[in-house]
Image 1 (cartoon, rainbow, N blue to C red):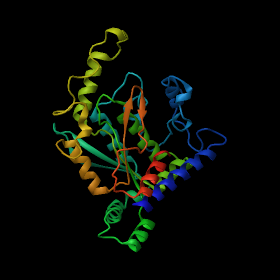
Image 2 (cartoon, helix red, strand yellow; image 1 turned 45 degrees about the horizontal axis):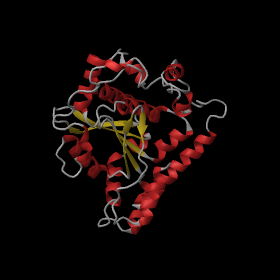
Image 3 (cartoon, one colour; image 1 turned 180 degrees about the horizontal axis):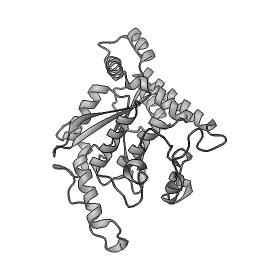
Image 4 (spheres, rainbow, N blue to C red; image 1 turned 90 degrees about the horizontal axis):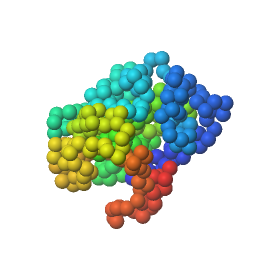
Length: 313
């Protein structure tokens, strides 16, 4: 819906503007960096130009466990990968410690592993998720909600931004990164983070293909960890990931033949997020596909243009 897209675009624009003025005296203010995090992140980054000051540290919290506290190293540390049980264990520990985080199970994999959904926002939103879901469902259905209804609900609801991680199992970065992102959203006092927390609901699926994730992590530790003879490495990934499919599990949208597809589709019908951001990697980089084709040709051209504008933010 166009008003919801505008609301989200406005929030992201505010976030960018706030970041310009945040931390004039310190790149981390008003946060305090977790001891050792600045040095560990810098040491793990190949060049300084790849390191945004927004993520050049992990904020310290006396009450909420960080990924470092739980894993014993920074999220994404070189030579370390987290199995699904570790990733999910961290999110559940975050839920237990913070009123700004809620964790639920959105489905099961073919091999019986949980597929988690993590919600992050301010305390009032997390305490009121059922009403927010109902408002967003009404906004998504013009049969239930006319223009006056939509105006009223938009004033009390908020846009939902969904992040999907770990779809392609050998693209290993997103489950690690999402642990740190959720923690940062929950504890940081920087103005741009508070703006996200107070104006959006962030939903995170940290490992959408848990069977393949565990297979890939186990393969890495058995065959690849510590190997430096790059011309003579074993195969760099297992011969198959999930129970029924290899790389092309994201082509299953309409068939709903896979457990992960059904879980994500059912999540959409339950939450109706305005943005669904599927995280992928290309070589060592996270890949962002900025709102381009294919698109539904029956959508309003203004909506298509606004989606493109929002995606570039």
